[in-house]
Amino acid sequence: MGIKALYTAHAVATGGRNGHAQSEDGIVSVNLSVPKAMGGLGKEGTTTPEHLFAVGYAACFGSACEFMSRQLKLIPKSIEVKSAVGIGPDEIGGFGLEVAMEVKVAGLSQADAEKVVAAGHQACPYSNAIKGNVAVTIKVVTA
Image (cartoon, rainbow, N blue to C red; front, top):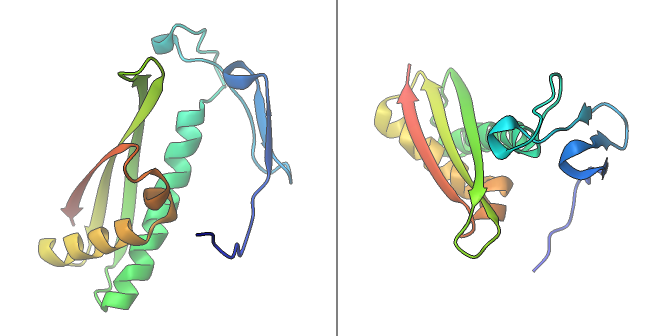
């Protein structure tokens, strides 16, 4: 079961978590370091793979919710997604991720906002990619 890719992003990372990562076009270009909480130096002006994943997932999830809101004809004034990606040891000796998202939906009732977000979660390629592998919690708030 594959997809027909409409777009493919390319990137290169060197030096792992204490290195550099860059998109093929150079628009994304970041220095990385292991955060102090994980025993690293947490160098100023650097980021982590978890930050990059959190940004990408939040953006993609928001777009999926916007797309599904049009399909459901439940159009909000705005959708804001805050994401938190945690990393830690898993039970088999490796590392795993967890994601917590807060989705702020303006202009809909709580029930309609929850419908839109649930549909967005089903449609989002990031959600589908990690389904069954990463614990994801979603809180829906209205404004």
